[in-house]
Length: 209
Image (cartoon, rainbow, N blue to C red; front, top):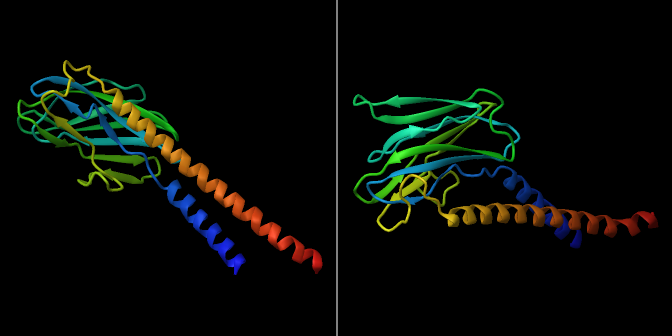
């Protein structure tokens, strides 16, 4: 009976490790809040946790905000899609080299003209890897596996002039990274302990034979 429990522990740890290996860090926009009627610089952060590099990012500009400029990023070229009035509705960044490697991230700076009216805006993004896999960050549910980045325009946010930055955003990102690492460590330790215990349990029986 105890052997069955140890086997269950091993299977559980293996499944947990497998699920963690498939978790992908989110595409985000910071700051997530800015003042109405201001020009603000946003940073589109694209992290990679797969062994395959990211080579392309497509970002849709939500209705209500106006994209002003894009800062060129070394190693990537960018193109725009516009509507009939000439408003930029979509940006596509494509790698000119190897792309974004495992455990790396790249920030794509953009400057946006915020509307006078307060509101929340969803930036739908599609991340493409070198092997052709696409991850759509388009879900409206913030707690989903692939939520769309959301920014909010509201009075009193304290971010104006295109260079505002919230240290709290970095802190939250840091906490997320630490929690993911902790899960990895705990899962690996649980697997190792379970294997050692199982081998020790079977060792006397092998000697008796």
